[in-house]
Amino acid sequence: MQAAALPPLRDGSLTMRRLLTGLVAAALCTGQAAAQARDPINPTCPAQPNWSDYPSMQFSAATKSGVRVLLAEGRIDATTPTKLQAALDEHADVEEIWLRSPGGDARAGTQAGFIIRQTLMPTRIPSGWTCFSACNFMFMGGRARAVDPGGVFMVHMFTHLADGSATRQEAARGGERTVGLIGEIEQASALLATEDNDFLIRMGVSRSLLSDVMYQVRAVPTGRNTETRRCLTAKELEDYGVSNAEGED
Image (cartoon, rainbow, N blue to C red; front, side, top):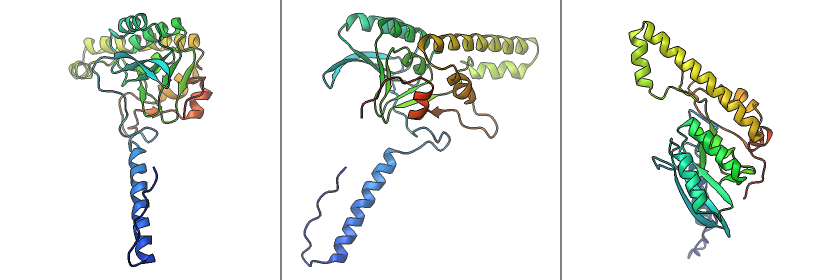
């Protein structure tokens, strides 16, 4: 952003000119600070992630800088893999998939990732867009993966506590049902962890991403540990093999 030229001062006052210059500079700094506002609870991440408010992921084709791309925007649910395949069939001329999503169904995200890998289609998180949770795995399905400067790859630990209120009610009742419920959750979580490991291996991403990052960030805040999200730096994205192509400035 460039500062507007200051109007000539009739009295030629140097003091007044300096005052106006300072006010313009302060306004610019304030605008930049707002654009880069951090989440106080999750300081590595933006306070207001741009991940779309579509309740179910939508797919649309567009031309960006002369390249045909498929825009994948919104929450991932059980219908996402089917809709993704239909969109790829309909828009056979697309060359890249751009993603922004708050996540959703973990297994659906992985299934969508496998579909993308079968097409050998590149994936991208454009500047200003956020790919969170299940979207991480959909993104990692790309054969070539790029996170543009200003793009956000945001992670947390996956959980099978889809209905937290029901789980808390069962836990409050106690007894055999609670023990059985906890056992089911532990078994499902272990199975998902195995699937996650297998997926990362197939996609050429370091499994350390799970142990070092994803499984260190809690899906639900506990005690003093309130951080539930982490956004990877450009170096982390490269070190873990999440991004393997250069992003666009």
